[in-house]
Structure formats: C-alpha cells, structure tokens
Amino acid sequence: MTSTSDFSPTMARPPQPGSPSADARLAALRAAGAHRFDPAGYRLVEALLERARALDGGARERLAARAAARLTALDASFHRARADAEAHLRALADAGVPDDGALAAALALGELPAVVRAARRRLRALAAERQTTAVPSLARLRGEVAARDVRLPEPLARDLAELPCEGDVVERRVKRQAQALSSALSTALFHESLVSARATLAVARAADNVPEDAGPYNAQVLASRALCAAERLSEHYLRALVASLQDLGALAAALEPQPEKPARKKAAPRKTGDAGPRRRPAPAVRKKESLFRGSR
Image (cartoon, rainbow, N blue to C red):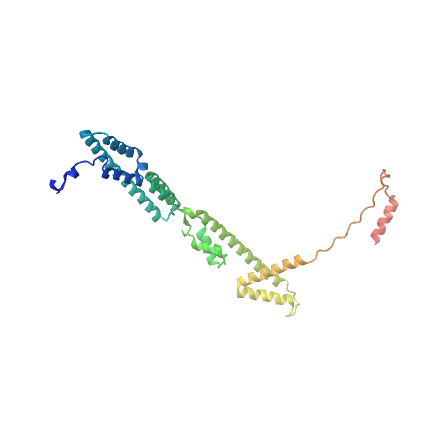
C-alpha cells in the first residue's frame, strides 16, 4: 500500500494554467489528432485553460483542476480509441487486405471512428466473400477430364490448379471464376467427344470403302490399314492424324479453281422508235424449231 509520504506537494496540486505540463500535453494531443477525434472535448479543455489564465486565487485553482481532469479524460479516451483503430488495422493486415494508405492517413489525422468503421466494413465484406458456395458439376467435370485423359489448354489447366475449392464447394469471391472454368471444362469435353467421334467415323468409312477385289498394295487398302493401326496404337495420335487430313482436304478444296460459268448472251437492244410489242413467231415455226432443237 502506498503511504502518504510518497506524494509530494507538487503532485498534490493541480497543474497550473499556462504551465509546460498542461500546455505540452494539450499540444501533444493536438499533434496526434485529438482535436479531430473529439472537437468539443478538446475545445472545452482549451477554453478552461484560457479562462483560468485570466483569474486569480481560488477560482484559478478550481478551473485549473477542472481543466486537468478534462485533459486527463480526453487523453485516456483518445489513446483507447487509437489503440482500437490500430487493432482493426492489424486485423485487416492479418486477413490479407491490402492497405491503400487511406486508413493510415486517417489514423495519423486522428479520424479514429472513421478508421474503425471503414476497417469493420472491409472485414465484413471479406467475411462475406470467404463464405462458401456450391458450383454444381465442377467436381464431376474435373473427374471426367482426368478419367478420359483430356489434354486441356495450358491456361485452363493452370487456372484449375490454382482454384481454391473442395469438390463443388468454393469461396464466394471465386464463384464467377469457378463457373467460367466449369463451362470451359464442359466445352473441352464436348470438343474431345466430337473429335473422337470424327476419328472413329473416319476409320469406319475407310474400312467400308475398300474394294473387295483390291490387292494388298491398293491405296485404299493401305490407308485403311494405317488408320486401323493408328487407332490401336494411340487414340490421341489417330485424332491428330484425322484432324490433319481434314485440314489438308479443306485446304485442297479451297485451292481448287472454281469452274467458270458460261457468260449470258446479251439481248439485242430495242430500237427507240419501235414502241409496239414484239412479234412472236408463228406456231408452226416454233414447233419446227423445238423439234430441231430436240433432235440436236
């Protein structure tokens, strides 16, 4: 227990108005931003100290003591609020939210309630983003890609590897990305099925179009054997081979010259003075001409 002898007469007296202790504490609080944190409280302490300077005797002492009490309360509330704001900023940093410098600047200015509100708003938004949601068929599509050994494009494979998910469950912040990747997987599987069906159909057509009396060195026989051997050795190689053959066929068709259409014979221009209708040939003449044309 502290004895009364520990207190000196200077400590028992309230700080004198205009003394370095009261003015220095007030100036330090202003530099830290207390006048922005609690404008009314800061102005009250400042006014009490100014009023006490103009008084003498007991009134001066009473106002000085009141100013000292208000200054102590302002100092304590300001530092509590500053510690709370700094704790919120540390929580943002621990959560991985990048600091754009705005909150640090507001903290330095003493706008502590605004810092706390902004930090809480960002933490709530982050918590809402990190809530999980389901993207149907994502896990099934990934499993089907792995089972069928589908070769995905490199960007798609990289994005799938970096996607944070557990089965069909992903965080809300990456829900749109997961839906886009699911659609890309579906498209890749459809394209793989289409290419596989084309390759199988090409092998079947090549085998069906082989003549029965063809020799062992017939071109169609050799092509059919090559396609069947490619199908047995590697299905991926067969798809690539059929795709290259289709590209070559399309290129040959594009380079083949188009047959020229016969030019139309222009009708003889009518004379301007001939305003009457054209005379049609007699039926007998027409019949003769048609028979002649048919005989040719």
